[in-house]
Length: 321
Image 1 (cartoon, rainbow, N blue to C red):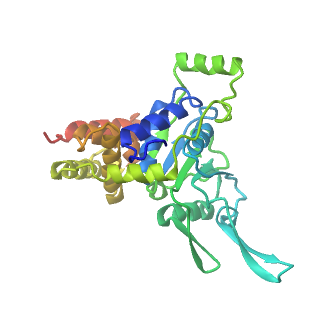
Image 2: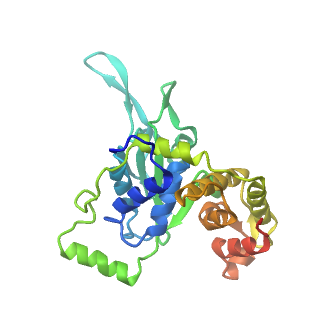
Image 3: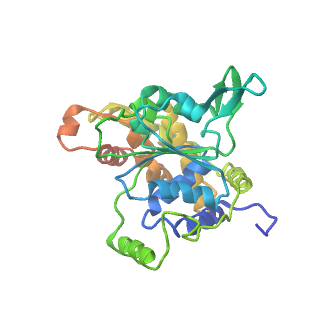
């Protein structure tokens, strides 16, 4: 940055988005939610069929922010040490040395997280929550900022270990990447035909225009956004309504309330608002809660989804004025 003044949240989001859309076409909602998670210090579970840009999105975020990036392909034979690290014997010095795993990075893509066994998933989720790992009795902090983007395929479950809802609760958002609109797919083909390789953010024109310091400066500004007592009550009422809804067997947790509030504050800051409104909360209700709910069997048989139930819940709870 050439200007010495602190970056504002609207400027931060605008700069980040302008770079990401050079590579990621037609996924505006996913871009916005990942930016919110980054500022709110949350993690994102990306769900979509192959070829919708999940890996590309993670790589583009890391490049635009000039951050370290690691990718781990989760497989059934993966071990916790493969991502966290292990102690390796050095023949020359005749001592054991710690070899840090790929989790020691800023942006970690946990590709197809539901293909790894429970021990590996638990090791990753613990690191996400604690922002650190324990290696050979040593507590090691992870680099800051630290963002996990975990992906899973919603259509192929053979040989997978689906994340339990209690573990999904560690993620701020569950983002669904659908097929782009027709015009966006035409744009993807046009770029490839013109020689722009969208699989590589650098070749697609994504430039490192921000930094970790900009993220921290943005977080400071976001923390100044006012959350009124009525908004906090509204968040709690929404979560409570999911616990009493007849379609839901397990509703949103207290952690879900906290994360929704913090995410709404980040969204308000991106919009240039000095305070959080009910619309900011409602806009993030589905991505913040959809992966934390367990529907009753009769609701699923009736064709209900977490999103449709959350829409009904939001309609029953009166927002503050």
